[in-house]
Length: 259
Image (tube, rainbow, N blue to C red; front, side, top):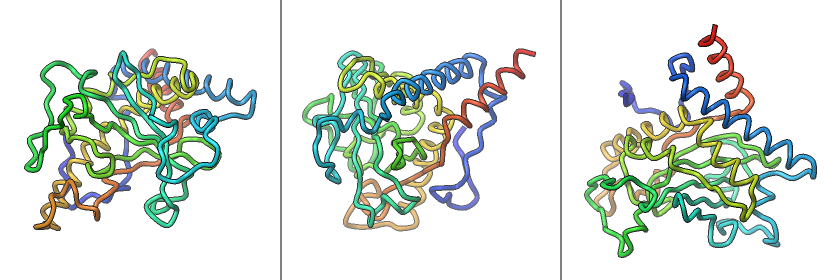
């Protein structure tokens, strides 16, 4: 159910998840995802590595705005895509707290169910290549130790995506999977399972994204551009996260369910 707040949501309003209300199947998927993430950390930790370092391997100097790895990561079976990059710290990068950079996760139309259509927004432009009508699922903010610290969503102009409504994007989340060795098997396993472990929070963020964009368009109408291209609206929803805390909550809910 979409949130209908009596006042505009702040992008960083708290997100509360009722883990006990989640289905047994969802909890078990989340528990397995958390275990896979921790296993990635264990293996990478043996060589003092982390998932950010994995996607930056061989890149040389790290440049703000550039995509890492070059050309992004693309799974040709699921049509999932992701990349890592950073913003200059004087811009949005430090507005919500310091970060090293963030991952952006996408799904392209070839990975969507037949009949999935973009939202009928007023300035929709059909891409020349139908598979360019990709959707942005979520972004994962990373600290300087290479560990995840926040999830966030963005306005359309930020990623150049095609706009799909929140309920459509939520229905696509389970289709995100990067199942290949390159550029890094641990990094691919990690980001795939981050979207599984934190699916409840991502659902909330996507619904808040739509609410934030709708509210912004009403409060700040601009003749020169649509709300989806308004550079004054960048991050539409954001939440702090902890893998360990999330997994603990999932396991507590599972224990209660199994008693």
